[in-house]
Image (cartoon, rainbow, N blue to C red; front, side, top):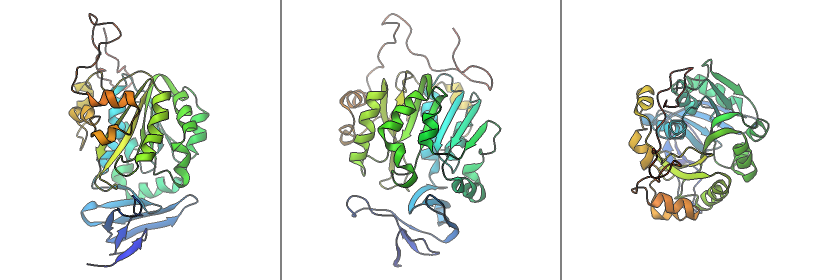
Length: 333
């Protein structure tokens, strides 16, 4: 077997090792065939390389961010679970996500009239345009506004601006550190319009137990609806990645996604309506990392959803209806 190039080192034809987790005992190894682009930006080391069946791979500061092989699991679940939960998502913010993958999925929703992308490192956007067209194809959509800014300040300075906010951040090092703090999460709540919701990248419960606890506890205090869900992404350490779902009202477990809206998204690779609910079903060891109320609720997903505010005799929760561009996603009477 070939000798690895070393932890965090990327060379043509060599085996790349991510920085090991779990006290240095567990990590990911990938053989890169060819380095396509490499640059030290003002914020981080940026590399795009090719890796056989994994296709093109984006690496930031020695950590794999996206591969063409499995990026849809991450981007589709980060975007479609919250967007299909909201009855009428017109204004959407993507925090980070300079590769464009999350934005691509947001733009599948015709009812989205404006999508803001806040990415501090414009070099990531430019590299994605050049080398990752499958991910970046939505960056030039007329509904998109790109903001090269610190997301912590950008969110704080725009209260009540968005229906849905998607936090597509890298790990909590370098430029992403502030995005994992409680102050940012408070500003996130204030930046939502009434009935708004957010989904935040919340790491792997296998590898980052303490971090998941630190993310989940304040979010559950700040938002009336909080839950944790996950997706399978083999090229992330442990093969799973989690998301914190935070809402001022809409509940992802109260109603199934509207079939017409799902069909209107076109040919997806990962998301299904069944996964929309199943992604919240967690192993018991993961539930132990969540606040008690959230863990208890997610442990019993097989039970019927609670009655709506109208009471036991009133109508139950309804999924949002079809949303042609410019029209309403909210079902009529």
